[in-house]
Amino acid sequence: MEISSILPIIPILVAGLAAVLIAINGDKAFWRNLWSTIASVVAFLAVITMLPGALDGKIYYINVINLVENLSLTFRVDDLGLLFGLVASSMWVLVNIYTIGYMEHEHEKKRFFAFFALSMFAAFGIAFSENLFTLFIFYEMLSLFTYPLVVHSGTAEAMKAGAKYLIYTLGGGGFLLVAIIVTYFVTGDLSLSQPGIFDISNGAGLLQVLFFMYLIGFGVKAAIMPMHHWLPKAMVAPTPVSTLLHAVAVVKAGVFGVLRLIYNIYGVDLLIQLGLGLILVALAAFTILTASIIATRQDNLKRRLAYSTISQLSYIVLGGALLAPAAAVGAMVHIANHAFTKGTLFMCAGIIAEETGKKKISQLNGIGRRLPLTMSAFTIAALGMIGLPPLAGFVSKWYLGVGAGEANKPIVIAVLVGSSILNAIYFLPIIYRAFFMQPTAEEEKELVKPKNRAETVPTMLVPILTTTAMTVILGVFAAVPGLPMSVAKSATSFLFGG
Picture (spheres, rainbow, N blue to C red):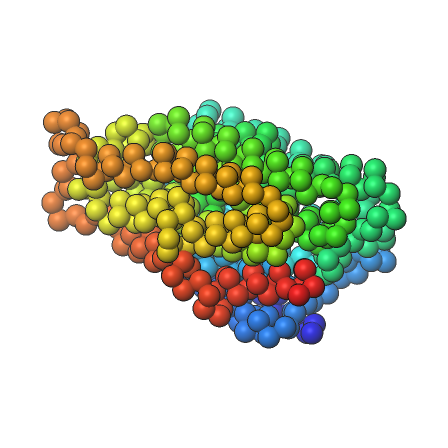
């Protein structure tokens, strides 16, 4: 049941208004922090207000403006969009608190917080877009609004990384725009409100070409190999930006777009007819394993986490590509599970760098004694990434494995097992170094905590403890109504006609 409501645009407007207010008087820390905090909380409350109705079968929508026939700026909150919105809004609250502590001694804080809010403005727009025209506008805004965050430090390395980021993301946007224009002229319809815009009568050849154009458009932000090169380079950005890129907005927008491509632009039945699901499964499996292998060779902690993200994102792509209900649930719930788990890991990396100056894994011997809570949180999140039960990552992999069985593709189970082994290979040595390896005499001096100083500031510690708790909650209590699993199952029921 569709209900006309202003709720879908409240998070978008709130984030945009916060950016304007920060730009006006964000030079003062009190106002900058106040506007960003109020906006994140209000956006989260607006999104969560729609959750009970969504679980009861209600879909909220609002038409802002009609441009021409079947071309409008319209927002609609279905289950898949709500899931993305819930993840983005809840993580914004936590990452905003973390950022307040992290950015205390950084420069250009007004600019940083303003563009962070604008990035969330774009992310909510993507989540709640009713049609491809609306989605494209906010999808490209996200690229532009995150660029100043990527190049925030202003170093030559940052500027080079930012240039690569724009070339990749805007280049992908070009493919997406052409595909959308062709879709409009072929079908006269850009709505994402049904399971599939196309049908086989549109021509198999044309549909196959368009599919790969859409895949490039969304696949760049989803970091599907070989379209991933921008992501490790972007790790030059401050840690809150890394968290934004990996857990909140950018890459999640990419995999969200891939799921829209599979379920709302083409639809399960048409992809089966065209035989495109198998190709996408192969691409995702290649990315999962290759990125994990590369991760094992990275000494820089954030780069290792970046390649881990590239691998983990393709779990979502893989789940969608299997075209099976259980796999779809696994893909959708992994949007949330990965966000909280990987968000924890990146924020822990930020604390390590801020408190000790250490950025390489080879420098972390004994660091668990200096940062016990931080490294305990890192350990739980890392075990979640590996897929250890009963943590969140296990739930995702379980459903993906069941979906592989439903799709009669046992090789995918081997890919998931292989990926978990590789995850263990690149995460467990970090944990072992932190808690069990003895630092050198020089390292021992560096690990001495200054007198009268806590592990880190509360604004940085509380968010990682909260996301760590969510990593446990989303595993142990995955089936509780209102958590991401229930939303994912509701979305899957509609898309597969259950």
